[in-house]
Image (tube, rainbow, N blue to C red; front, side, top):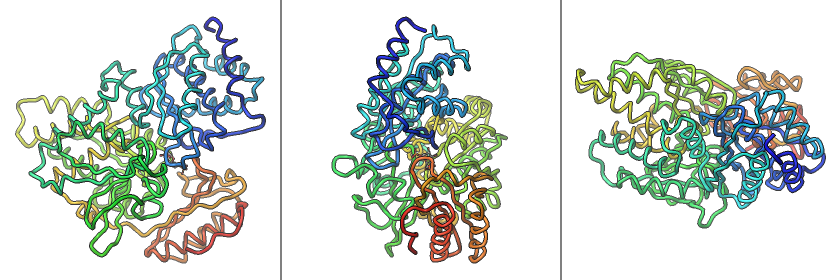
Amino acid sequence: WPEGAITKVLEKSSLHPKPAGLVLQYGTAGFRTNAKQLDHIMFRMGLLATLRSRKTKATIGVMVTASHNPEEDNGVKLIDPMGEMLTATWEDFATQLANTEQKELLAALKDIINKEAINMKLEAEVFVGKDTRSSSASLSQAVLDGVHALGGQSKDYGLVTTPQLHYMVCCQNSHGQYGEATVEGYCSKLSQAFLALSKNASNRTDDQKHLFVDGANGIGAPKLREVESHLKKQLQISIFNDGSRGKLNHQCGADFVKVQQKPPTGVEISPGDRCCSFDGDADRIVYYYTDSRGFFHLLDGDKIATLISTFLKELLVQAGLDLKIAVVQTAYANGSSTRYLEDTMKVIVRCTKTGVKHLHHAAQEFDIGVYFEANGHGTVLFSKTAEEKVQLLAKSTNINDERKRAALLLQNTVNVINQTVGDAISDMLLIEAILAIKGMTVQQWDAIYSDLPNRQLKVTVSDRRVIETTDAERRAVSPAGLQEAIDGLVKKYKQARSFVRPSGTEDVVRVYAEADSQESADALAHEVSLAVHRLAGGVGAEPKPL
Ligand code: G16
C-alpha cells in the first residue's frame, strides 16, 4: 500500500460513512438513486476506480450523473480504459464495496486487491466529471476523496457530458491517438469532421440548416454551445431548455419525449421544424417534428440506426469496400424497424439486453457495428481493420472519383463519431451531415418505414427483482405465471408483442407493448401492467386504463 494509505482510507471513509443496513445494486449504468443516499457510494467508487486504474495500468473515468432521472436523484458511471463501460466482473466488486458495512471496508478493499493481484505501488489516475445537478458538486468531491485516500492522481473535468468524459479517458489511454483529452480537443475533432462532411452537401437555405434542440435543462445545452462556435454557421441551432429556467428532465429531454410521445414543454416549434432532444447528461438523442395537422412524429434510436446504417452501406458499395455491417438493438426496438433492417436493407440484426454495455460488446463483433437503443442511446463502432481499410483507400491516388469521395466521406464519418459510447452531440452532427449530404428532409427520413404503434408504462412493485427475464429480456421466467399471462394477452391483438423487465435505473418495472393500432397497443400495455401488478407484488392501486 502507498505510505499512509490505510490510515487515510480509514480517516476519510469516516467522513463518508455508509448508512448501516443500506443496500444498493449496481444497475443498468452504475448506481443510481436519491442523491441523499450516495455520498459513501461516491467515496467508495473513487477507491474502486483507483484500484481499477492500478489493475489496468491505465486512466479510469468516474462520471457523477443520474442521466435521465429526476433532479433529486444522482448516480455514478465508471469508465474503463478504452472509454467503454466498466467490465462486468468489476461490477460485482463495485456492489460488494458499496454494500460493505463501515467497519469492514478495509477488509473488502484487501479482498479485491488479493483477488485481482493488484500492485498497490503502481501509479493510478482517475478522470472525474459531473452533470449539472445541485448534488453533483459534493458527490464528485467524495469521488476525489476516495481517489486521493488510496494515493491516486486525479483530473477533475468539472461539468462535462458523460460521453465527453468517456472520450477523454480513451484519448488519454490511446496517448492522443484518438484525440486530445480536452473539451476543446473534442469540439475541434468533431466539428472539423462535420465541416468536411458538410462540404458534400448541396447548397441549403438557412431554414434547412436550422435545428431546434431541447437540452433537457442539463449539461448538453452549454456543451452544445461550445461545439456550435466551431461550426461556421453550417448548422443553425436554437437551444431550448438550456437550464437557465426549467428543471432538469422535467417535462423535457429525450426520455420524456420518447416515453410520452409528445414534444417537450419549453420548445416553440412550428409544423415541419426539425427538432431533437438530449437527455440530462447528453448521451441520448431523439428527433421529432409535428406535421401540418399537428400530429407528432418521433424519430427514435431505431430510425437513427436505420438512417446511419443506410448511409454507411451506400458508402461501402460506392467505395468498393467489403466490410460486414450489423445493427444491434434491444427488445424495445420497434418491430417495423427490425423487419425493415433485415428484409429490405438485408443487414445483420442482433438483439441484446438493455444497457449500452451489452450493445457495445455485440457491436464489436463486426467490421462496422451500429448500435442504438430505441431510447436514443447509441453510436457506431469501426473495427481496427475497417478503419485501416478506409484510411488506406482515402489516401490512394489511383481510384476513380466516386470511390475517392466515398472513402473520404467514410473517413470523416469515423471522425465525427464518438465510438466510446452513445453521444447526443456527436450523433446529432452525424445525422445532420447525413441529411444534408442526402438532401433529405426529416419527413423523408421518417417515411423510410412506419413504426408500429407502441406504449411504454411503469409499474411499481414492492421488489422489482422478483421479475427475472431471459432471451434478451423478451421473456419473463419469474414470477410464475407472468409470461403465460403475457402470451395470452398478446394473442388477443394483431401484430402484437409485449415484454416486461425490471428497470436498472429507477425503482419500477417497465412494460412495453406494440400492436397494429394505438388503441390496441395502449390496451395491451394496460392489461400487461395489471398482470404485473397482480403477479409481481404491485404497490398501491391497480393501474388504470390509458
Ligand atoms: C441508462 C443506460 C441505457 C438504458 C437506460 C434505461 O441510460 O445507459 O442503456 O437504456 O438507462 O435503463 P433501465 O430501463 O434499466 O432503467 P441513461 O441515459 O439513463 O444513463
